[in-house]
Length: 381
Image 1 (cartoon, rainbow, N blue to C red):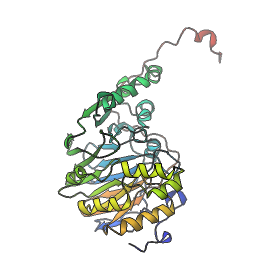
Image 2: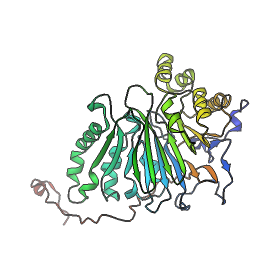
Image 3: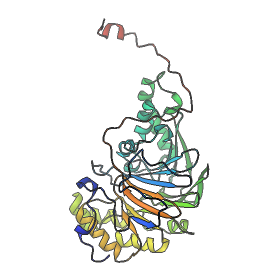
Image 4: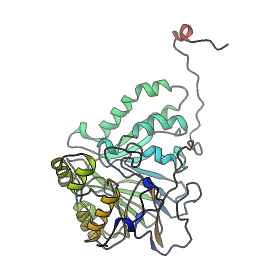
């Protein structure tokens, strides 16, 4: 992989490409044929299958090409469970393209409380409850901090308080249970199982990023596994959490400081500080992948431009020879015991929300309007 040229890699989706950015789109031997692109709504998830979709591949600054950090995991269990890992700005809009029921989108695992990893929680709680996510609360799991105000519980309580007007305005029309945010905060410093239900187990582990209070996650289902670093420098707890092997490891990867500075407008000093103090370079990511040896490795949190993508493939490929993918928004991994298929999803720019099968009946109640509306409202009779 040391002789990678920009024209040997697929064109990014924002530039008109329709393929995943990888030299290994198929690993293993699939038991059935897959379309070149993933077409939402046309591929049922099989029993025991796992599907991982990158809703946000990007950075603290969202763009039309890259939403901020978010990963969606669907599992083929009878409940049709879906799990969000982080929910950065723009991720909910990408979810809409997948034609999935919004009432099933109620489990969020936060890696840390940087704004680019939690920006769309307001939309998930405050807005999607209006269009079908009506069966109950958003359940949030996340790490403690070095003091209570830096933990997930304090954050979720503050978001609920910030939505006070929104929720009062929808009183009567919306199931009030769907406007709640229920937080489960756990000790960031411990590797531990934080969720175990319906055949799915989620384990958290601490990672090194900025200050205390950042974690990564591993999800296990039907002898398949997915690991997500969150934002992290190369961290031993992640490597240890991957013991026994993982099918897919998505790890953050920043470009070299010079490229980051040139592409983002940051000074070289700030770019170097961001990389060295909080993030992972391509060669460092390759070192982690060599330790973990996932069936497929994925990179996210990368500034996508043809030059940077080529640079990352060259640097990472010089130290790691396994299959890896530079993820972009709507990169989809279909994971089975036989194979891992990596594709891009066909995006639908305007698709109405799909409520899904309602599990918690609620009858809307008409609220009395404020008295001053009588004189202020223009009659339409």
